[in-house]
Length: 435
Image (cartoon, rainbow, N blue to C red; front, top):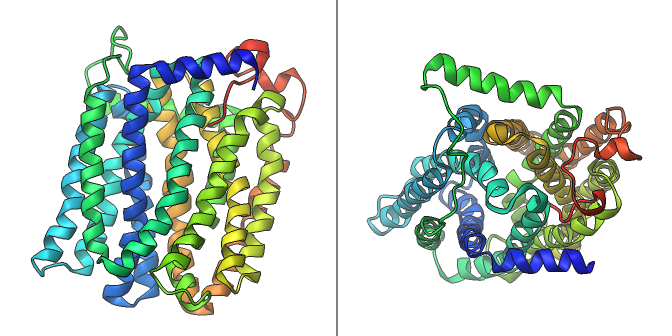
C-alpha cells in the first residue's frame, strides 16, 4: 500500500460517523449470517423437503425482484438515515417473531417462509438507502476503499460465524438463534441513529411525490443503467452469475446432508460454509490493489471464467467436506471479485440523485431476478435429476456469463485510458480501494 493510500485509510478509520456505520453493518452481517443458515435448516428440519428448503433461499431474494425499483426511487427522495433506522427496527421485530412462536409451540413452516420473505423485503428499502448513503458519507474518491473495508470486515465475520452457527445448531434449536439476529438489528438502528452527517442532498429540490413522478423516477434510473455500457454489461453478467449461485446455495443444506454426509449441524457443516466466506475475505483484500493496476472491466473479464471453472469443479467433483470447503473458497474468490467490483463501479459512476435507483435496479436484476429464479430452478432440478447433477447444471451457467462479458463493451475497455474515462478522478487515475 502506498503512503498516500495508507494515510487515506487512517483518516477513514478516524471518521466517527463511518465507524458508527461500519459497526452497524458488522452487527447486521452477524445476525444475517445466522438467519441465512438457520432459516433453511429450520425449514429442512420441519419439513424434510428439498424443494421447501430451496424455496427459503428463493424467498430471501425475491423481494428485490418485486420491490427493488420502487425502493430505489423512494430512497432517493427520503432521508436515507431514517430509512435505514426504521428498516432495522422493523426487521428486529420480524426476526424476534420466530423464537417467540417457537417458545409458544406455535412455529410453522409458513411462518418461517413469511419471515424469509418479509425480512429481505424490508431490507430492500434499507439497501436502497444504503447504496446512496455511503458515497455521501465518505466521498466518491473513497467509495471503493470504504466498500473494501465494509465488505472485507463483513467477510471476516462470515469466516468465523458459519462454524459457530454450525456448532450452535448442535446444541440450540435454529429458532432460538434468530433472537441474536433480532438483537443485532436493534443495535444497528441505535448506531445509525448516532450518525450526524447528512446522507442525502438536502438542497436538491424534489417534486411532490405522485404515481406519475414515482414511475418517472424509476424510468430515469433504468435509462441510466441501460444507457451506460459498463453498468449495463456488469449488471447482466452478475445476474447470470447470481442465477448460478442462487441455484447452488438453495441446495447447499441438502448437499451437505446427502452428498457430503456432514448433516445439518456441527463444525464440519460450519466449515463448508466458512470456505465460501474465506474466499470473500481474500477477494475484498485483493480488490483494492487490483484496481490500482487494472480497470474494472479487466477484473470482471478475468474473474468470470475462473469463477465458472471453480464453480463447476466444486459441484461435480467434491465428495467430502474438505474438498467442498476448498472448492468453495476458490470459487468464492472470483465470484466475489465480480460482485464487489460491479457494486463499487456502479456507485462510482452514478450521479448522486440516481444512486438509490440505479443501484437497487442493478441489484434487483442481479440478486432479485437472478438469485430468485436460480434458487427456484435449482430446487426443481434437485428433485428431478438429483442434487449433484442439479448443482453441476446450475454452476455451468457461469460460462454463459463469460461468453456475454467477452463479447460485450467490456472488451473495448480492456486497456488504455478509455477504460477509466467514466470513473471519478483519483490520485494517479487509480481507484483507492475495492468494493
